[in-house]
Image (tube, rainbow, N blue to C red; front, side, top):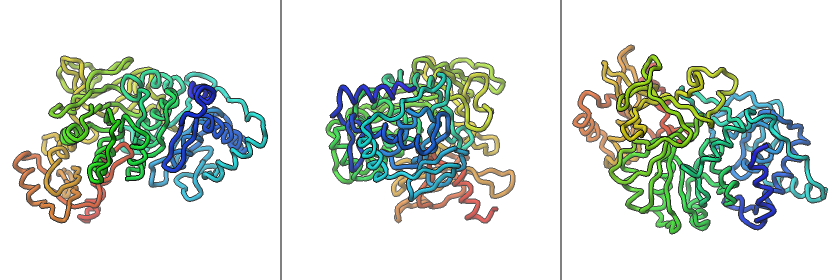
Length: 482
């Protein structure tokens, strides 16, 4: 059984009126949350949910968290689908979903909404007796949570986290992630960052803000909750900061901006520092490995320097044969630690998990200070006639160009075997793509994009990373190359 199960009960006894969970339109105290979780666990057990079953959750954030805690009490394996927009095949035993959504299928489907929750709580009170006793996960290496990730391939996978791995991550979160201050984390519960923020809030006895819609209601509610930390991917936080600026919303208690999922750009760091005057914390890690390194960024710092390694992390830079390279030399990144996932659901460890190491697909080096400095992803590097280009470096060059609000580079072949660099641009009506082309030719001679096109949005995953393969597919259709 999770420590979080005990922590909720302890907070319900010691701080019964403290706010435990806050949605846009409703709050739950620790006492109310404890009752809600017990009531839902009782109902779900009556529905036939049993220990070790894989239960997929597709609900709004507050219900998602209540159901997740209830499933911990039943020792079921849970997986959140929050933030997904397309159906996914998981092979789940049970699907718990809102009646209006259906992103997965399962042998048993349970539909839940707020009315269902209120009925369950009312019925629980009417019984006047405790629900089923909490069930212990049988072993520390038992899988308790699965988290969706694109892995190293770009294809959806579910990383399996054991009780021991989650407990280890929780014991170290204070050093790099959540330290007990109230925060608005824009990541969903289906991400490792969102999930661990919720667990940490329970551990510290502070409210978990189940709000990840980036809109004015969320930001105004966060301001009213006196948040100290604003967290999310750089894209998510950047969008939120833009809304704050546009609508003159202030966060007077803000003390830190934290990003993960991708390296923040120099422009992001400069703007956030100037406008809010708080530290910009950048965390490098993965769903599979948790946090790996952390740095505090100021204007002018290099975001590719991810900082010092976190406690308990063993990281190496190796060559193509798996042999370690000298300090200052670039190679493939691999790491291991007690918080490492067990592997992926329904498949062997594969090429990403090898001999106890996880290979995230990143390239980098360890500098003389022991900091990990990244220089791209193996899976994204584009080879143009022997010249390798990291498309993220092209994205960074474009940042701040007049009239361009977003852009992403990708690879495309108009002639078989001849890769070219493409560029998708989100631009205002007066955005001058010819001027952008001239600038890139001047700053990146021989490495500049040769295929340009406007798009409505840049496709990104739940962590804000560009889905470059989708751009390739889109432009192949546009150019009738399929």
